[in-house]
Image 1 (cartoon, helix red, strand yellow):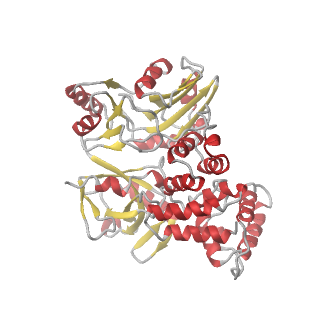
Image 2: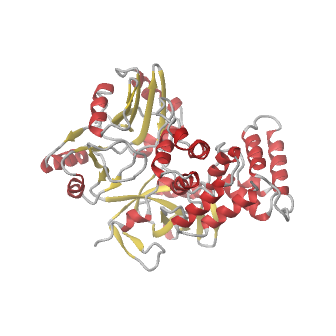
Image 3: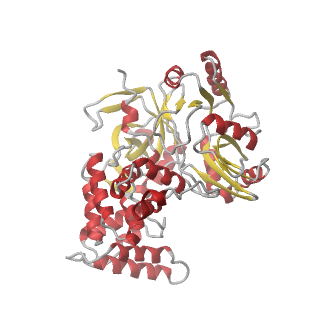
Length: 502
């Protein structure tokens, strides 16, 4: 396929908010791809590179020379070959060779193709929300039901690989995907509940009510002595958390896949700040010892449990990690459930999770069989920009522009601003960090690529004619940044709309 066709499709997808139109455009492109073009094309259209980071930042790209080509000649395969070579460069001479490769690619690229490549390599095409639309497009292009594609994606953890299997071999090849100990699984997520009473009313009495810890999500795989540990975004952190590896090796089983949280505790047994837990994920050593607390078991000693009801998985968890389970009660009375919430809050945790005991494990937030209950509303939003402060905040990037995720794969939708909840330390961090994600700026504001996720506490929302989503935040304040999440894991505009008082 000509690269220009894919670039045009990306522009068409970005120009509409219609999920149906996006899906149809993407499906049309996928159907025309050659087999070896599927994986790179799916990755690019979802705003990602198969190779991950390849050492090409803004400064390198802006230095590319040459006038854009007048006619498109590049193919998908040719562009992927350049990316492959860029990803493999290191050592002496790599800077010069990287410059040569980019100059050569840009000399053959039209203006539109060059702009697409720059946005792709700098992360400005990163639209994690588009993964959901792309999954639907894969199913449509292959003429398949959506659920087998979603399941295969959950088990593979890599959408381009899933797409290639669907388009190449249909249901038969998708059915070959199995839970593989050592390969991360897309995590199941919870939906926010208005209150504990609402969650219990919707899910009924056959539920588990467990502490919602203020930690970082982890997924643990063990096969014999081999242990691998992944974050919520499926990034492997095994080498940075030796205490967790050691503990998992001591569990009374031979093979297991566990879902849970990890956090650091004070000497008094209360959670340390979330950022202190997250700091351990980026360093080989740290001052804080991390402890794991598990809430689900997806595999135990040769048996896959994904399709088993939660009640069965919790029984397996008792066997696999008896001393490291998150506190929970099953089939509680309303009074017992309220007591569990009080106990969680008294212990310094966020609230509770209410989970249907008959539910299987399914990636994402489809359905509401898992619901999170917090005493105050908190929501994860994308930072779209920041205004320069004044008064005592002169010289600092202060007032944040906040956006909710568009569930149809478009750019985040602005829902408000806030300058509240920021310490001097946080202001200094923002001022240093935000320019690394700069998209543009004017005299008052630095506008960012939609990559940074921040957790916001708010009193509620209200209808708004000012913001495009028709909803605005009320009394929003910054709680913390979420380096464990990308923009595709932020909350959607639909989640905010659901908070409107009916």
